[in-house]
Length: 195
Image (cartoon, rainbow, N blue to C red; front, side, top):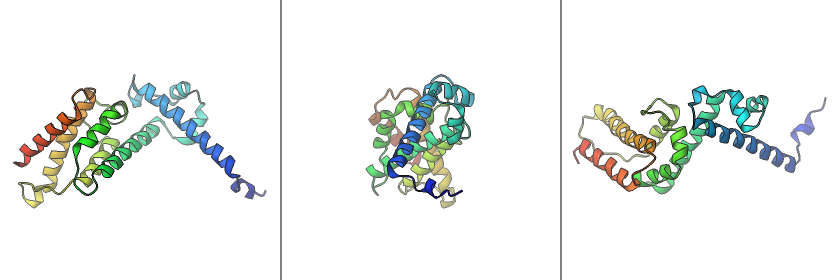
């Protein structure tokens, strides 16, 4: 059997396939977000997600192994978008917390459902870990009042404290303005490093 014609799909057919894939993934993502408003990802089944998205299970399995895989993909994309936003705003001049907080506030429902969904901060959650490591890589070199061998511990302490503040802020619906949270984080870090 000659399969060559399958690899030579006309461009408009490729575009339709890409549109179909994008539509399917959008429906799955929207369905998952809807379900996440009521229960944790661990309790969402493929069957109920497919019912909400009005897709069949075989369609779901064409793209994902399980619901947590879709959840992880969505969270990773959100984390990447946040880090790209921070990089674009802070080109080489360190990290200004305000643009990050404004971005999180503007997308607070997504961050609440995909990143800061647990009652307490969980730095081992893959999406939170991705944000922590990405942000940490963007952070300026701080002069810290510690021995060189203690530096990584002090930086981890500072970052986890700041992340904890952001986590609580998102869980509280971003009720305080980003400027106030940025000032609070700055003040806490300043106190911790003796600035």
